[in-house]
Figure 1 (tube, rainbow, N blue to C red):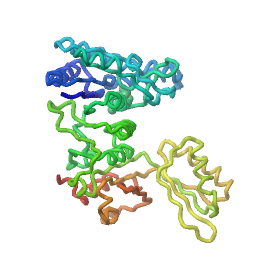
Figure 2 (cartoon, rainbow, N blue to C red):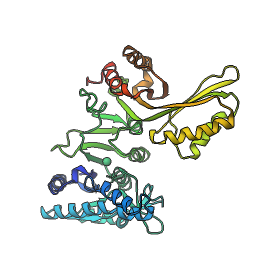
Figure 3 (tube, helix red, strand yellow):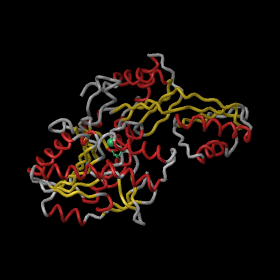
Figure 4 (cartoon, rainbow, N blue to C red):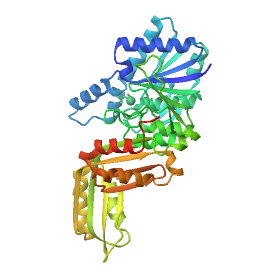
Length: 409
Ligand code: ASP
Ligand code: MG
């Protein structure tokens, strides 16, 4: 008998039938003797609908406090419906909004962070044999205002509850059956991973793999929550992917576990920059002041007193970044600012890179053989990323998947 936190996403609770399905699944776990805390999202499409309403009524500029009042309603509907569906099949259950729990957060409306969770009421209900159902994505701040945790935030609610309750496992049920070597829509041979290390998952989530909200992975790492991603559409969950903290021998043998691609990229080049201290700060400081996130950065070795500087930003910030850099150009006396917003980042991730040499060169050779030009490179201990022309994204992902033998178990 274990204490399990389960989370069901929007698709899994997207209709009455699906909510009843979830209720049956919960009943099965319950009959096996487990204690269950269940976190749910809003019905699929509901949060988008609420965002649109808020934008329409406010001329595209909703007040953040009121935005959270509106956004939090989606999850309040599903917790009540799921509790009723359980009740209808004879499983005692009780629903909780975030503030009823209480999930205490900071006051950063629409992107609040969880600070503490009071587990007393939930524990009392579990002791009474009830299934506890908690609204994901929401909390309450220090002055009693409703907050939400950012899109996809129910994953983080689930992991945070699992940490607070010291649950044996946190199971995220979603419309895919686990974490794949890469996006199966791009590479049909992509394979579900039985296990992935927490670090790899963190890299993949930050590289744009949308299986889990990145903050939930960070949370799991900090509190060492045993986390599993499963399918809500398959009877047994489809086996799923376990996110582990141990790198076993099996895992050490594979160089690369997954490939991620991200088209939300644009490159900016600043040429002929006077090569002196403070230049990187003057260029990137101005970009940071505009709240633009910089990802890959390259500064060339200077020659004849000048150097070149390139970096990437999210595509939506491209025009703004160019404008800022043209102002900076005048100030620092650079020769030219240019850029390209038809680029993409393709990354290979694997904890096994630590114990293998030549991983990056295998990657570069595979891309060269297809005539794909690499514009920028960045690396970490367990990741190599390249920036390439956007039109080669799918091709690059496919050739790298094959080059590292990821189709084979
Ligand atoms: N309903 C929220 C959203 O759509 C939270 C979640 O689903 O995790 O972003
Ligand atoms: Mg989600």
